[in-house]
Length: 274
Image (cartoon, rainbow, N blue to C red):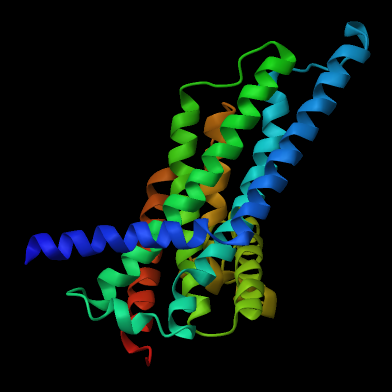
């Protein structure tokens, strides 16, 4: 029985990957991203070949990649939102959920399999985008962009993508696709706004000079995972920048708020009517 259940879970993860891989959306994103990276690489090669060395700013593969890395991070947010919203919602809309729940698996296992499969797909897309950029930019500038610290950065971005997918899934259980996507963007913006507002304050200053915006910032800063810090940390590690975060405290807050969010995501899927 345990072997059968394990086999069903693996099959569900594979089915998630194949379902999204067959979609026109993924094909479009793949082509668009590849063309954009090739265009950026062509412009970089043109700059290197046409501009005299004396007139060039300090340019190497790493500095060029930092700009592309910021774009890839932003694009990963969009891709995570698109596939996170559709990962489970489409099963309910098309009534496919009935078939999956006839297997010896729980709704919780079903949720994690769907989200894990979506995460594999989106993070694979992220790795493809980053590695293609790094290789092409290294060739164009004749300097090495890849470094072992990039592995740590990629691991951090894997966590970022996973949490964004969970947030997307929660919203997809509450509202339609477009409102869910807009809610995701609003949430990320609010998290970034609250973090930038609160990080410069001492704790004793939190409740001074209160306003509606400050109350909102305190609530968001306290109860939601600070995903922007994960992206910020990934960038700092990748490009050897100063890390301006209290890592022990921020890690504890991130883990706790993420677990709370996953708990509510599980409650949503358990209470969702078929």
